[in-house]
Length: 278
Image (spheres, rainbow, N blue to C red):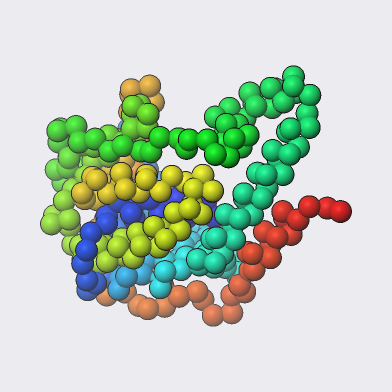
């Protein structure tokens, strides 16, 4: 489920108030700047406050995500099944993670000091949060306008940097909503997602997501048409670039789980996975 859910922060970056109208299709690709080669990265459909995110590289059997009526559906076509992530399920996931971390802390506390130090060293930055649940969370992402402009996907865009603890880890090239079609649909979608994420902020924190990161992403005030990682101050050779952005009327079935697909009980699976043996 990780790749599909990874699209959520990108959707939050388009937050604003607005009403829905025509549908929008946005496609992107990963480009290697060294040789110009590319592969499809993501296809996003938005209409009437609903969204569908596909990963074309995974093929027709690859999972995709639907967001509709404040619920996330992760669909697995090859298994003809899907998972529903509503408020109750997300809160249950947070509870299961917190319970599992408590058990791990109990087990670590039983280890001799030298073994415990070795485990903490292997865990790195995660060790502090697991051994000290009340510790300060990692600093949130900060978005900074560099004042520079560039060109991507045939459009002029503003260059923003994303930083954590003062270190740049990603660069975005952003266009204003007035320059792209379907802005009302995008704003309506992001507004609904933001409301849900705010309500679930405590649970998200337990899952290792800093809710303040979404606030920072909205500071860019537009939509990123190019993004690339920054490593030790230098842009990575691969970047994700917008390849198509168009308005069209989309069928309602695009935002519905196919008939006949079986719903997996994620809460029951979590309970079995975290159940302590007698």
